[in-house]
Structure formats: structure tokens, C-alpha cells
Amino acid sequence: MTLILVVGDMHIPQRAADIPSKFRKLLVPGKIDQILCTGNLSDQATYDYLRSITSDVFVARGEYDDRKSQYPISVRVQQQELSIGLVNGHLMVPSGGDVDTLAATARLMDVDVLVTGNTHRFEAYEEQGRFFINPGSITGAFSPLEPQPIPSFVLMEVKLRQVVAYVYQLVNDEVVVDRIEYKKE
Image 1 (cartoon, rainbow, N blue to C red):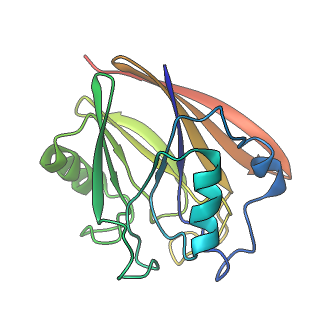
Image 2: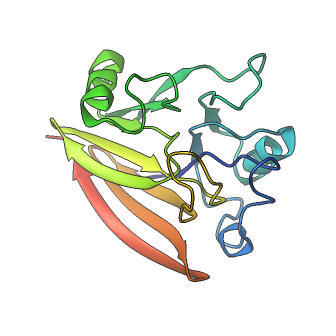
């Protein structure tokens, strides 16, 4: 089993001061195997914090990350029997989590799981035999698409051809956890 932290759209310090302390307490080094970040880290300190959790960190460049940064526009990783694609989503037309656009991107990247960001709201669903997940904004940073987002992130357990996604949301200052499963046929 591989445990993957899926985060994004942090916008520290421009739109949010920090990751909520109730989330930070859950993100301890030595338990998480890999981090997939949909971008918009906005500063080096946030990247360094992610690297303190695990050294295996992949970031797709968001529209507010420095264009000169080392982050690529898209990333494709293999986890056991699943291929996972990672993009921010700001270059998709139409943007905003359009299902057909995301499905076309997943086909183009040839991935079983597509992780995207940009909307600042959590979403997870299966479409055309693929799993789509948007972790939302771990800081709860506002955006034009979502002026009052709920802070959220996802922990994905990958076992061979199966994903168990645990969605963490900060609702009324309490951490709420939901579980979603996907199995590649």
C-alpha cells in the first residue's frame, strides 16, 4: 500500500496565512509516502514544508507559481498498477472542472486517475472508467470560482488497482473525514 497526500491551491501568503493547524497536526513525517500538489504553492517555504513530510513530492505548476519555477505543467506518475496524472487545470478550456475537458485530459495523458486543482473546491467522481479528484484548497484560499471555499485535502491509499480516498475538510473548525473508493476494472 502507498499513502499519497493530495493538496493544492495554497496561495501562501497572498490569499492565506498558513495551512490550518488542525490539518498540520495530521500531516506528520514518516507516514506519507508521496505528495501530489496541484500547484499554487506561491512560496518556497511551503514547498520546503511539503518536503519535510516526505522527499517524494510532485508539483504541477499553477497560474500563481513562478513561471521560472522547476514545476512542470503536468506530471504523470505510476503507483503500483495505476497511472496518475497531475495538473493544475488553469490552462484547460473551459476551466472550472468541466467534466468533458477533464475526461479528454485524462485520455490524452493516458491515466487512470487524474488529479486537478484550480477550482478551490473538493470533488471526486468516476467517469468513463477513470477516477477524477480535486483536493480543493488546503488553506481555504478564496478564488473567483469559489469565494468561500472549505479547506480540504485528500489522503489516497493505493493498493494495486484500487484507490481509497480519505477526504479531510475543515467544517465549523472541526475536521470531517469522508471515504471514497475507486477500482480500476
